[in-house]
Length: 140
Image (cartoon, rainbow, N blue to C red):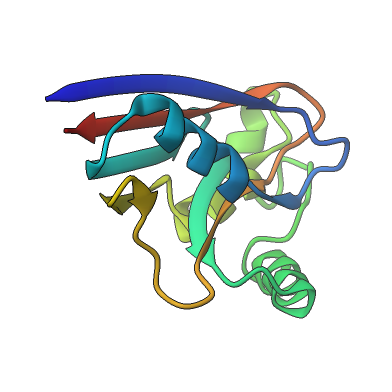
C-alpha cells in the first residue's frame, strides 16, 4: 500500500471566503501514483473547513449569508463567551463546526471518484493569516 502526504497553505485577506481546491487535490492524487484508494482532505485549523459541494457563486453567497445568520461576527465578549479569552473569533469556530473539518473521496482509476458537480472547497472563517490543509492519500 502507498501513502502520500501534502499540505496546502492559504491566507485569505477577508474573514470569510471559499476556495475551490479541487485542482490541487487532483494534482496530489497524480503525484501519489495511487490508482485505487482514498483521499482525505482536512483543514488543520479550528476556524477553517473543507467541504464538498457545487462551484456556483450564488450558492457560495447563500453559504456566507446563512452562516452569518447562524453565527454572526461579533468581537465583543457579550455575545460569545469564547471572546472573553481575548479572542474575537468565536463565530469562526461555530461556522467551522457547521461546515465540517474534512472530506474523504474515493480514488478510482487514478482519479477522484466524484458525483456530478462535486468539487472540494476550503472554507475560511477567520482569515488574514496562513492556514494549512492536509491531503493524505492511501491505496495502491
